[in-house]
Length: 269
Length: 254
Image (tube, each protein chain N blue to C red):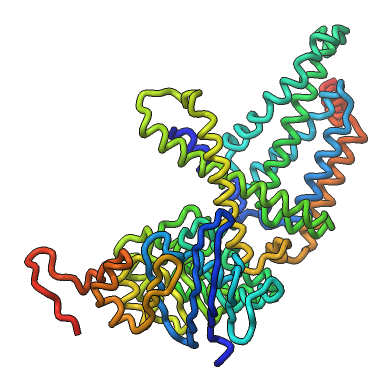
């Protein structure tokens, strides 16, 4: 029971983190969004055997974690939540792809390499997306999406879904608390009441969502979600975007780990 | 000041299941009046508020704010003039910070961000929670949430303030603070409540509702002291007017 309440409280962690005042948080949301989108495109553009070339892309989350002063564990925990899905998708690769490749003197099945590649790409992209939310906040992110002329309905859908998650979870927590108080010693919920609890949950959340919507309408909401201007663009914001794009481009065009490796070998020799 | 008056003429409303929640109400509220609407559970108070705000539309009769009829077309104008504070502040506060929540209304009316900021600061100062502006609404206490919900409405500079059970779920100190705050407002106030003492202190006029109809409408000092009327409508005299629970000594009424 307390786990559910804790998760509910933790769910708002990203919103809390987004309110920090660090150099990364102060960067214009639009620039952070564009940087993240570029990062995602470049990371997924690598072939399925190019694991080594993905390594320089660890640099981006590491720097953001450090400069935005974000806690590592709670964000990585959220990344791990997605990983089972990726394992489900990639786990068949080692079974179907039996060919072997030699990697640094070690013989590996190509299936395992592709599986690891998917796992790594997922980890990097999900981390980047979470870092974007944790350094920007959903509201400012929506403003940035609107600035990029993303359709109003789509942005609204995104924002309301994000809000609705907490409405739904609060109702779940209330129902479960009421259930557990009258069902001592039970682990979980007995299957005989699954149906009525799910029905209750749907009706309650509809009701609650309707009240929230009424409250929004009473304060002039007409389909456009205004979140402020998001501040003015400064030179530093452009430098941030340009800097990262140059780095991503360099890491995409050149095999940086191989270049650094050969450089070290040359120096050692 | 005719544009601040609120007029309800022969209002009827039935829910889709056929339940008649409002059954021929007529009243008029003048500028600056403070009116309490009281009645037992299910009397039709909340439905009446929804009809006043244009969340529901009457099956018969009309609501006029100033000279404007409440219709779908006039809703934006009406809602700028009338602000409603919900019974449960959690339904009203949905942005990530108190500031953004209070700014939600003014931003919807496309005001300049500087003007939005002025209004937000002013509203938060008025309710005494300026120091909480960067906090997440869900982390506030009950009293603070209520204050934030009131600020969210005040930032729209409404002429008429409608409040549904404002003292519900507040501890005694927060309730007292809220009452002192509401006393300072010069807005036209419409307050529905089961807290008879709050109505007694804040409203000079009281409308009593029973089964969707107005049973009594008059000065609070007369209505709330009418034991027979209160009993008939499933209500009680304000505690301040009841006999001492320890020694039974009668309070002086007048």
